[in-house]
Image (cartoon, rainbow, N blue to C red):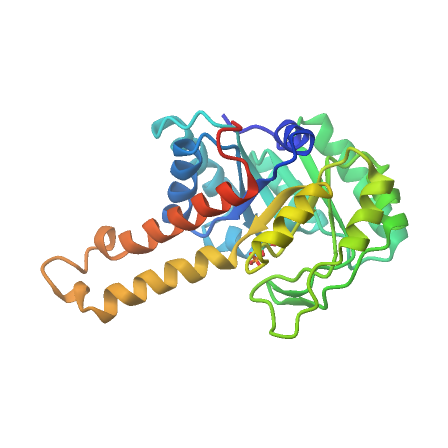
Length: 287
Ligand code: 13P
């Protein structure tokens, strides 16, 4: 059964580790992540962007697929199904469809409007036992066609949003989605520290987990990050493994064209990436 992400992230923050949010794109992604979480006895959050939701045939399709896998693959570790960077409307759609967690990304609204909409959604989510993430300070890079510059959040604004009762908070600290450019300045630990001083026990979320060096990940966890989002890294691993299979001509040998064979190397590559992240984040054996 899906669970909200509140408990697992409270435990993570108190225990000084982070739970990975791995974004899903299809059945292979979902199965690879769930099996890896189970094998490593780790809690996990499946992230779904609005674009991926549309691609997979809608939120109800995803809820059906994930719930089916939890039961038939005997997944007993805590699993949350979470809308990633949701608009106001899509937060409602996902709550209605059976998601156990949503992120309302109001970072592009003026702070007053972000506050008003977040407040309403927090009340609605909590009424239904669903966890909710909010964002302050836009995360850079490209996400579903929206390009942000990777700003640093204002700690006072973070405190204002935290006080609305959100369960965990994404704050921009110079992180960006996708690959980091060669001239990237790194994470602003000064900002992160200032945010944690004001928000206390609230679990903080680090988006753009792909390509952040291990030492920065560890430092971010030590300063209150309890959820780390990873998307691009699984995509790169999947693409590289699939490329290798095709370039070796394996799709043309025997029944190598069978999707169950063709997609197997990519599936294994996602599993390896997720396992590596769970080890780095410290969530292994924390289910
Ligand atoms: P990456 O694609 O950079 O790993 O970021 C994922 C993310 O933050 C999803 O919200």
